[in-house]
Image (cartoon, rainbow, N blue to C red):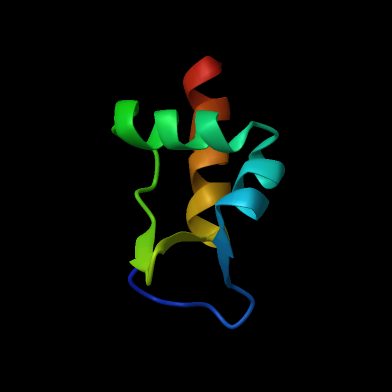
Length: 67
C-alpha cells in the first residue's frame, strides 16, 4: 500500500474495489493471490481493504503494460 495517505484517498472494501475495477469479488481475490503486481490491501478486522490510490495506480500500470 501507499506510504502516504492523501487527503482525497480512502479505503474501500472488496465489494467496492471489485466494482471500481469492473470485476467480480472472486476475481479480485484471484488477482490478489496470483498477480504479484496487484495491491495486497490490508486486513481490517475480518475484512480486507484497499486504498483507492493503490487500485488506480495498478489500473494505470495495466494500461502501460498493454501498450
